[in-house]
Picture 1 (tube, rainbow, N blue to C red):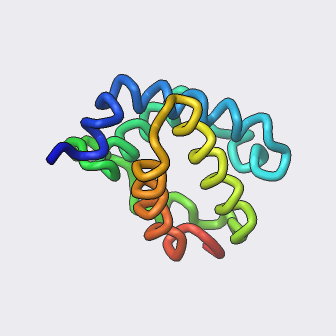
Picture 2 (picture 1 turned 90 degrees about the vertical axis):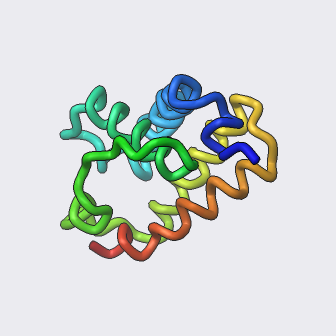
Length: 118
């Protein structure tokens, strides 16, 4: 059985999803302030590798731990939920079916405790 990473079309497609995702995030005034001092090109590359790995692709992610990279950001549950909603919308935009979206969001949900209230 193929991985979600393979079904989505690998890293090339995931990079497109990530670009669209960040377009949604940066247009959202409830969460875009978290990225105001972020090198977005680097962020998009890191996120593509991280999401690729989270969806069953090769582990090329070299960033810090989720808790460490979100330290001092004080991300609240509503912020996390907004980011998840944007990811759902980005995946849907690229025609990912609901079962695969649900599987991807389940993976993301496992990170909640490492990201919020840090």
